[in-house]
Image 1 (cartoon, rainbow, N blue to C red):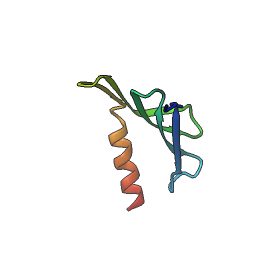
Image 2: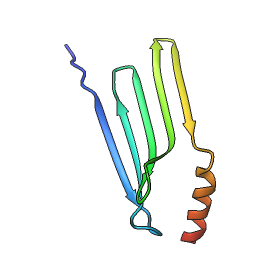
Image 3: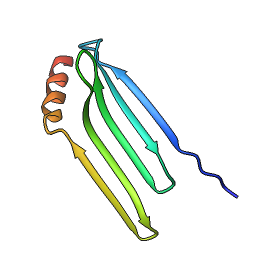
Length: 85
């Protein structure tokens, strides 16, 4: 018999431009049928969630997904890209 336990994978990266800020990615399997990924930033400010992806298997034929993102994250990424080049 297979016994399920929740799994969590957490990465974080420091910005080259601002070493006090960090980008985190958290992937989690809270149950057998749920999967969540969160991309957020921390630093000298409150935690800012850029993207949250949630996928749930409702039954063997129905998969439900939801994506939430912060619209300003694309502009922030372009600023960071221009600073790095």
